[in-house]
Length: 229
Image (cartoon, rainbow, N blue to C red; front, side, top):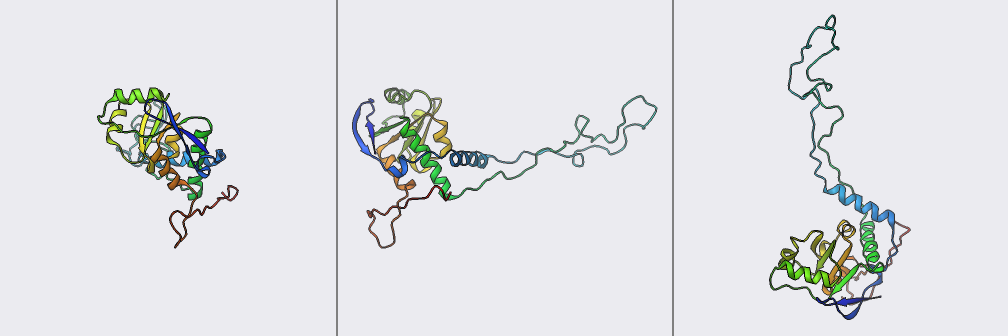
């Protein structure tokens, strides 16, 4: 499978071969949805807290006598019905963390990457290096690549100048290739990746397994069964 490689001026300079086990996987909606929900849940701090009527400050005496006042019956000032009283069934600190099988996490990411390729929402750039962290330079590159709106820029490793140049651009996020995740891919329309970043993604998220004693360039592949997930 081949994808076009662009330069910083938006012109196609070559085509590169990408692995089908990473960029040509059928879309699995259930697995992708579960991965997205898991990632959102794991971002939650879970420190919201309220006090019950037994925890708020205030006297426990009866506010006024039960009868012959013409008013509603009142007990403690800590009642949830009164302002400053306790909260009924309010949130308390808890852990929202969810677990997910490793195979499913990897499958979800490959599904999203494959969808980007099928829908033409990926731009592979030969090199992305800025001498100075200028926002205008990054705007020109994004305009040439047709990614003026939300875009995720993936580099092989951390590029401080690229990060600084994109910091003031709304909807633009820069990540090194090892930190690519489902939520960021779904949150941005266009994926812009360098050639070296694409190779890193293939190495990290591919299904290739090198057996012990085998050379590093050994073409041993494992096809993961979707039915088993």
